[in-house]
Length: 192
Image (cartoon, rainbow, N blue to C red):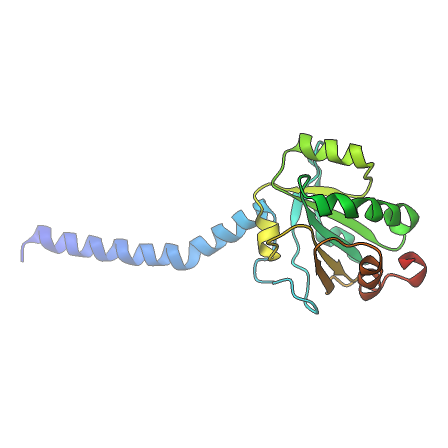
């Protein structure tokens, strides 16, 4: 075997071992960091009723302010995935706003995650409906995907410890909102 062939074999082995190292050790860290930039902070946690709500960070439209789900720990959260073109989403937003105005500052936080729309579209929608609770943009759809959202609206009721207590696919109106708030541990006075 010639010297050139031996060097080629050794170089190939080094490249393969180096590739395996990158694939096994470096790529997962890069992918996890990339996921955090897109929204989801802990991709190992899945949102199931009775389980921890996966944390995420997203931007508010207009201001670009970063908002994390964990910023609201200590208070129940109504986490709503929606879009401006969704009719049922438009139906439930006034009820969310009314509850937010009545008790939101003290007993429950409404956090609306918009699915893949522009700042302008979301800001217009907020202004049109007079929404004053936090709204964030899921530009890549990564948070909605991680939460298993495949239709809108989708709402998760999370207790003060960050545990998902109830989930609803479809509009959250009337008794459905009250049941979700109770499941999340919102005091009775706030649920009315």
